[in-house]
Every structure is written in structure tokens, then in C-alpha cells.
Image 1: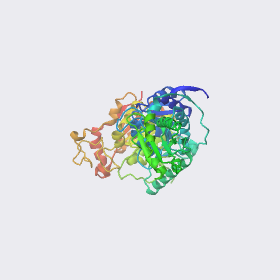
Image 2 (image 1 turned 90 degrees about the horizontal axis):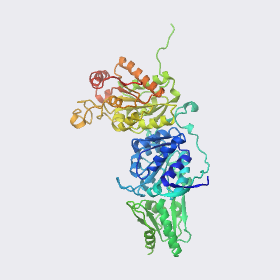
Image 3 (image 1 turned 60 degrees about the vertical axis):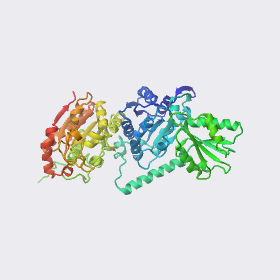
Image 4 (image 1 turned 45 degrees about the vertical axis):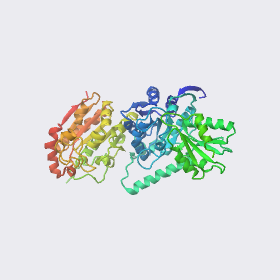
Length: 352
Length: 247
């Protein structure tokens, strides 16, 4: 501890997962996240774990389902088209209330799209992605260090809520190198896996049944209500965001992930010039931090959402401000990141 | 007169009412699995994976730890469970729509990796739960709700012989096809199920038992007619036997 190492984002994510106790990885190659499975295939055997390359993303996520049912810490990683393929399985995992971690190193779409960074999977990540009323706990780091820190916590959160946790990154984060430090996450009280996992029938005195099928309508409604109560609990306890120079701001920029780093530079530059702008950076995008938007002062004239998408988070921002403040959007797509100058111009453009 | 009990419910089978149709052989197949688990004394460390289809409710009948998997994905679920907990005995139970159609990639790759799991494959040449649609295993000329004039090669290709196909792979330990049509076949089937689980317990890799089964409801037959049809029509196309045995 305490030592900083220079690591590529994808490899840092993989190492963080191992240090968080993950010993089982199931995945399928896809750019730009291949360094995660490659790193896992080298490291997991060293720590007594299992790396298994599946025949598809469909198989990968169902291996995660099977692995999570044993109560051990399991994960997969992929990028946008691969996450689409996994969506059915993620729905089953959410329905069966199994813990796991899924990393999405987002690339541009739709379809095969491209292999360059994007944030165009926001709807998919924050609204569940697959069929049925379910949500993931979605953590969206903006630096490699934050990605490491959140990954360290992600496995605990998955176990506490018995829910899939997604690390929503992007191709920049996966491919860039930064100095990182691996810190031990604060200890949390975790449920005993033997209460529900397979393989403990003798210990528990009754069998485990890992399933998402409820043919009885009352039972299925009750199951859904239980899940919704869990998501509300997540919203109460786990919503995270960061503000930057928000005090006295007449204009507010919001961005998450890598885009937030660029937006931060734009905000800093304008503030140095005396332009009253601040920033809200969501760290969890589900649950979304609606409160800081709802609580914006009456002096705030406009909110600008900056994204590497055609405008997806902007919907949540609108829910947050509830019509009290006009919400604008600026974005670049196709693997192109907005520049500081472009964001500065977009912020200046908010002035009536 | 002293009474001696010579037949009872296997311990690994739950005491519940069946939902299967009259003349359906799922109940026989379930019983063979439960008997093997009892005989090998592995009830407390066995994990089953249920398919999507009529047999999804195997989790109500077999009294072991159970998963209910997504359609076709049982071998992927089982592979991960077994890799993480090699001390457990892991089996999947899948129909022909589940295994030979939507889940073909999962079973082929689990077999090809030599996953040390056991697959019970129910081939009744039709989709049961959804109401009698054509399966990859539907026989030539056989009518189904989605091939109302009978299966023809030009539109649908030929019935897939799963056991033979998997036996071409290097990794599997045991691959066999049995029939559940008549008592003499069922006795052979029982031996095959036991061998499959023994293969896993000996760590000799992937094992699969394909069971030719009846579906009188969707075949539009009485139970007795269905067993005759299985013997007369299915066995000639799907020969019984062991295609791969552990060395």
C-alpha cells in the first residue's frame, strides 16, 4: 500500500478486481477491453482462481450466473455490442438476485459502430438493459484511480444488495495509462454466502434454488416489489456525486466519466476568467444524483449536459431540475471526445 | 403375513404431484437421475441446472441444490459452477429445443472443453412447453405446428443427431443414447445415467446421455401409441448405444 504504479486502465481494473477478492472471470474478446481478460488469464492462476474464455458473451454472462450462484466473487468485462448480447443474462442475474461485477468499456454504436470511446450505452446501463423491471448499480469513474477505488468497493456492493454492479467506463479509460495506488476499501458488513449459495446444503439443512421464474402472478408481483424496494434502498444509501466550483454559479455543467475531466478543465478556465460556472459530476448514474440538480439555487440560469453520446444523461438531468431550469446539451460521438474549447464555447452559448 | 417394501420413492425425489402429461417420459427420466444420485450417495453435494421448457420444473422434483437457467444456457451455468466447486456433482437436464437449437453452442463448447459435468438430454423430437413446434430433432415427414405438412429437407434440413456429433470431439468422456419407451430400454437407460455420473465422479470429463422420449400430447397420440411410435420411428433414425466411453 502507498506505492503508486503506472498502469493501463484496463489492467488496473483487472488488478483491482483481484485485490477485491474476485477469483473467477468469464469473458469473450472484444476491443477496447481485451487487456482485462488478458490480464486475468495471467494473474488468476497465480492467486488460485479460474480464468475461462467463453464461446460468446451469451455464454460468458451465463457462466457469471452459474459462478455467482456459488457465492464466490465473479465478474466479466466487455464492450457495448458484447453487453447487448449479455443483456438477457444480466436480467436473469438481477431476477435471481445474484451478486456480480460487470465492466463495460464503452465504444461507439449503434450496431458494430466503432472501436473508439463513447458514452452511448447510458440508457442501456441505467435503465437495466435487458427485459423486465430491474436496475443495475452503475458506477462511472472518471479517472483510472477512481476506477480502481470503485472496483474495490463494487464487489462488496454487489453482495450487500445481491445485485449486479456495473463499472461504466469508456475506451479512453481502458486504454490510457495513469499512476494508481491500490488502497484497501473500507470494510463493510457482508451477508453470509452460505445462506443462499449452492453447495452448502448440509450446512444450511435445506437446498438452494437459484431462479427467476415465478409463474404465480401474485408471487411475481411480490418479487418485483421486493426488487424495487431494494433499488430505492440503493438510491438512499449509494447515490454519489461530486460538485466543482458550484458556489455562486449561474451556469452549471454536468458530465460523467472521462468527459467530466474535459468539462472540468473548461469550467476551471471560465472561472479563472470570472465566468460564474460550476459543475456536478455524477459518480453513480444509477442511482442518479437527482438531489443536487433539484437543489440548484434560483440564480442558476441553465444546465448543460456534456456527453460522448447524442444526449442520454440529459433526460436524467431534466428529471432532476424538474422544469425549473432550462437544460441544454452538447455532445460528440463516433469516438470523438469534446475538446475544452468546444465545451467553453457551449457554456458561453448558454448566455441569453 | 410379513410385508416387505421392495419399491419406494428415491430419497432425491421430492414428494410432490407431477405436472407432466399422461404418457410423458420426463417423470421416468427424473426418476433415473434421482436413483443414480441416491445410489452414489451424493444428494447433499449435487447441483442440477434446469432448462427452459416443460422440464424447467425439474427443480420442483429433484431434491438437490438447483439453478434455473436461461433458455439453452444450462451448460454455461454448470461449467462455471463446476469450475468453482469441483467437489460438487453438477448436471444439466435439457430438452431438444433448449439443447439442440438455442443452446447448441453452449453444449458443444462445454463438451469440447471437457467440462466435468453431466448432461441429460431429452430428445422427444418436438417443442413441448410452447405447444408442439418443430425441433431440430423432429423427424423427416413428422408434423408439428410449425411444419404442418411434415418436416421436409428443403425447408428445414435433417434431424440432428446430437450424441454422434458430440462423440466426434476429443474431450468428452461418455456419450450415449438410450430410450425410455419400454421397461427393457429403461433398465439400459438407468445404467447409462449411472455411468455418466460415475464418469464425472472419476474426473473423466464431459458426459451426456441422450434419452429418446415421448410427447403424446404434442405428437397427438395416446400414451401407448406414443411409445410404439418412438420404437418404430425414432430408434431407426437415432440408434441406441454408447458412442464414447471413458478409457
